[in-house]
Length: 166
Image (cartoon, rainbow, N blue to C red; front, side):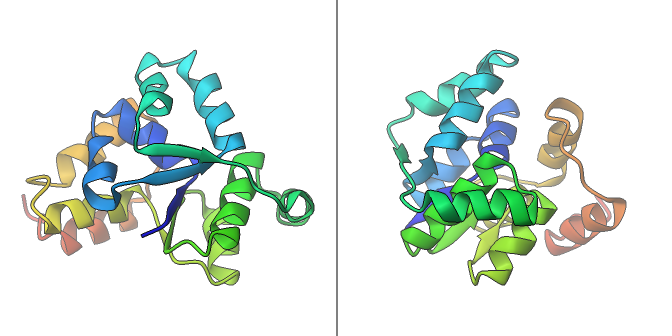
């Protein structure tokens, strides 16, 4: 399975101590150079993020279609990490793109990519018995990683996880 990730799923999961879920679910995660650079810059703010680049199951690959990256940046208003992650996912014919930002998710879907975000990963992890509950992890994401989620989506995820009344 080929999985490409944008920055936020990696950094968010690193901050709340759940990065290992990615290895359990996907085995290998591929990131473009721009994401590696964003993780390096973020690690100056939070040392937990610096561990991501030293993991043997996170691979950095260059995108080859730099014109498409620039097109996504200028026409779709995506940042460089999102644009490179989408481009690399297309180039590798990835099975999954891990991305959370709304504009990036919309463009990836329009381009025919299969996408998952952190909340989807948590639901997969719970379904596979890798975590007991998603609610405490989501709460940690919100309080520790500045993860933004609407009340409606929060409730929908808890409902999907059968944790609505817990």
